[in-house]
Image 1 (cartoon, rainbow, N blue to C red):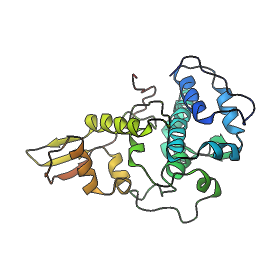
Image 2: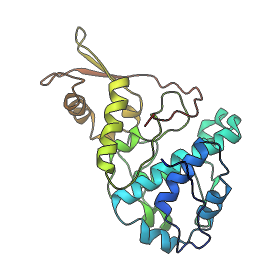
Image 3: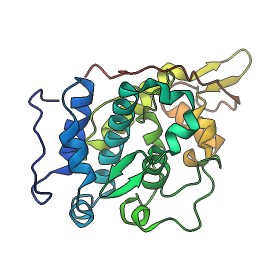
Image 4: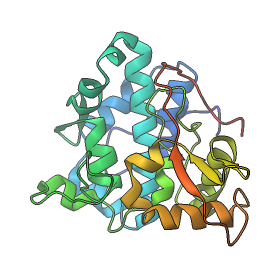
Length: 245
């Protein structure tokens, strides 16, 4: 990420919002002045955004960066907001294209195709709003769960995502997180998986596909049929958890 962070242009027609999502995240990381990014996103024209967020990779890269940037920005300013995490995630504290939205809206509305938060990933909203329908991805990509940092110690490390080469980036993020968090105990034949794979089990295609993923990554021997247990999540606040490169 370049240290020459550009202030967004005043005209939304000239603003590259996907690049700006990276620059916003960089500004938050380096404690630079972030107000211009907040203003630009708050006043963004929906149609201009829609013209730029065309592909699935456009949307995933943009909203992953935004989720991580807003989370870090808000909690750096006021860490006490993390005391009530449920309220923190559902609070409409973000102004986006003249709409008040929450971190939950970015994650479960846009990035998870309007999935119900507390449904293990199996249920979708019956009546998602117009904004969600306009900007959400078409299909859920389970790999996004290894990119979103909600401020907790157990969260994945933060990286800067871009549409070009995004598939490789998501594979790397998946491998890095699971290599560090998943563990197979051969004596007990138990596969220990991170809690987020339990919370969003449906996104992964169920336990069978979680096993296949671990076999693919070499965490679990092929043709093994283990019992799955999910680890506890460490919710201790841990900011500035960025990847080194």
